[in-house]
Length: 396
Image (cartoon, rainbow, N blue to C red; front, side, top):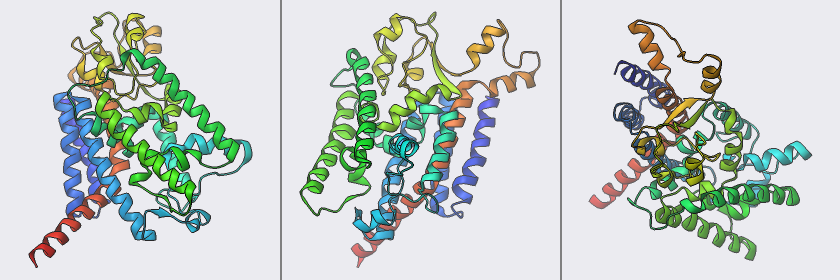
């Protein structure tokens, strides 16, 4: 209890700084700040990581959408991207295409995405720094705790209690398909030296920005990404209770899966406690646990695990937990010995404080706070102002 209270107090200070203070103490920053503190406290005191994380990510995604669209209208008066938008490199850089921008730049020193290198709230350098820090800390946990796009899928995938379409038997094939899509997108980007994913495959253009409809190709492209949005972000998540776009199409998610071994945290499965009930496989939104994972006693989910906490919450034997990546090496070199081993209440509190089940959630949620605060507060303000304006007009 002391550790949960301490971490909640520390998170309150972080929220105050990044959300309320940087939001100039506006009523909207206080509302969103209190929401964040409430979500974190709920995770700490109930232990239901996935349940409350999903609420946070879905709310953030909705507010991000409002803020992003509002900012586009403020800057250019439309969601449409004109030829001038490209030539002036005024397109906000999207983290989803980092692997598709990085490889062509390494090979040809050409930036294939029309964004500003510096000097913009979504410049290439700023998002690359954020990505690097996320990679060495929470790894693919970004997709579960900080990705504003993924939050929309999270919301739709959580609307049904049970899936209408079960996918566990096909999880391995779905993972392979995801990496095949990554390779295909990289090759296409190199072939055309253009951001092919953005032009033809990104389902989120419907709620962010899209090319002007000036000819048949742009009309076809618009139809494609509208179809992909409803299929991959709405319909399939509703049917399967899975993050289908994140797990089948997103190049960033595939890249983070490959780089996740660099991160500080992982999810482990205690094979001695596990009874093989397969509840974890049923609830995993990222197709990261299947029958082979459990039957072969691998002791961890598959490579696409995004540390969302769904399996941790549902396991009846409490056989699944968050852990530090280096814990295995420590135990091999120091058998039977725990971190901060020793007597005393202070030592016990410190040992609990650095328990991965608390420390990971604190780290991941901190990332969510930092990433979400500015845009979420902006989105909340825009919604409030629109409602106030509507009520005033209705009362006239």
